Amino acid sequence: MTSAACLAVLLLSTAPEATVPERAAEAYKAERWAEAAELFAEAYEQEPDPKYIYAAAQASRLAGDCASAVPQYRTFLEVNDLPAAEADARDNLEQCEAELADREGDTTAPADSSDAEVPPPVLPPDSGPAPERVEQPPEKTPARRWYADPLGGALLATGVVSLAVGGGLYGQARADQRTANESEREPIYEQRINRAATLSRAAIGLFAVGGAAVLAASIRYALVGTRHRRRKVALGPRGLRF
Image (tube, rainbow, N blue to C red; front, side, top):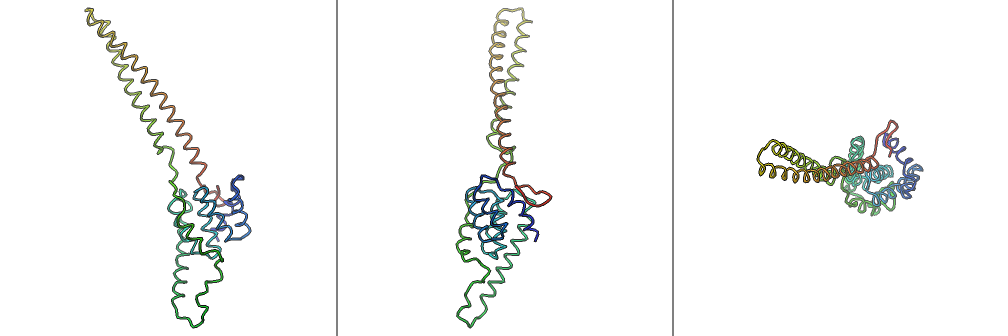
């Protein structure tokens, strides 16, 4: 089964400080699927990372609990930033939906015995409330790429505009200074030299503001990029890992 091999590395690479993911990984490795699904769902509530809801869906499906796996797969497909796992998740979702449709068809058939409503034995006893909890996961804003960060963009725009305006003022100040030096009339000289000094001071202030804003934008982009790389699920040669 490709999904089981795909998750093997994922489960073994959980961060050491994450207690709930560690327990979930141990349960998955021991093939205690229902327990692993519940723990991964709990881990997703604590940290809404797509890898946890994907692992919960896989464990639910392996436990035979497609009723829980279907909403989990759907949630993963809505919030995931891992295109490499999307095809596998869609295939498993279709498989579970088909299985649930078959079961629904079986329950509509007439039954003579009084125990016809007993759920299939493959379902874990606590599978009833699980879908309800997973269907409404905590809302998660998809992780932004570093270049789409609004604060970084605002800082960068401020810096660029300040530098551009400062450059224009500085150019005008140099032009006024040249005009003053070439003028033989004292009123024109004083007017242009005074304006050149004022424009130069304004340009220097804008250069300082613009430079600081561009530097702050660079630092912000670096922080956002580092955070995004830490949360991204990568696909390695041996399967899914994080």
